[in-house]
Length: 467
Image (cartoon, rainbow, N blue to C red):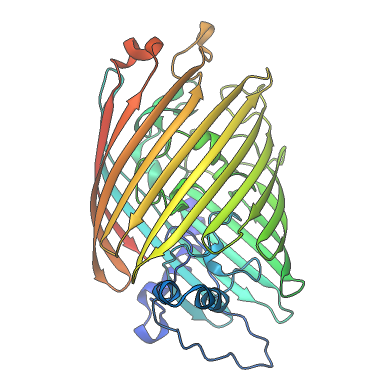
């Protein structure tokens, strides 16, 4: 039912894939990650003709690097603007989160009347093998298909609609093997441990409205069912430092598990490179039925401050008070803290290098705090090769059951992974890639018997991207 209801909206935005070449824009700006559903067109006053752009159709990032900071600033100002404010569209990531202005952006754009449309899709076929006593192997498909539609109104305000669907429910309720990961449930009774849960069919269905107050100030409102509240860095599948890896981070439930909540309303204010926003949202994580739309209940709240001090940097700190996030522990509330720094720079004619450092903390009703750290990086010297790596450390009590089947003792575990993917461009907006990664897990002595020492794992994958 959900797929039939929302597919027309996504399909309308992806009409750009079938448009004649003259109506399409295949240019790749240094902008939000290819998985980021952000669209925008340059805004100019109705009475003033748009200025000529000598850089149109060229790789602006390489010009910025070769001609210095003044050229960089000029290019940033010339980019298409965000649907939420005066800043470059390249700054927008998942939900209402920010990333560096120099981030990469790809998408197939088109115009239909007063509406600007954008479409993007990615599908990845993965074979996953996790070793050790608690390991498993599985072949599955993940990815997403996204569309958005934007309209700039006569009073200077902007309406933006966005939808995102995922094929992940097809992998089954138990998701895929991922040692040291834990969270959610496959059957409503048993927690998923050493596995990554599948995301819902409908990952986002949102609308935003923004109004500029001046050349430097804007206010906006965002609603989603589902959507993403103002907490944490961009979700991992939208971060440039993570988007090329098919492996979900084990820090997911500390940093960005709220990227799909069934019911969210956010209000925000932005001034230049600073943004302050607050959300009310449904705290309960999605249940094991991955195909439905759950009833909204705004019982939790979050606040986030973001700062982009330069085109290369994006910083954020956030706090959330979450009501009953876990389906299997309905009487347990949680508070969460998050802080992150993302750095992105351009390399040569078309390359980039992006890194994320993030910290998260979860505290339950019994004042027990659990911390998580993440450092990840990805470098792409050209449009053919991308190398990526990640290191994580978490404090968790979910890997071994305690008395009565609840959470057990607290343990500190870590994971490191490294991988690469090679892409072939089939046409201007279509790429096919083949890649692999290797991961190594570290567990304390108390868990060695359960895991058979420090187990390793790996993935090989093929992907198709339309961006």
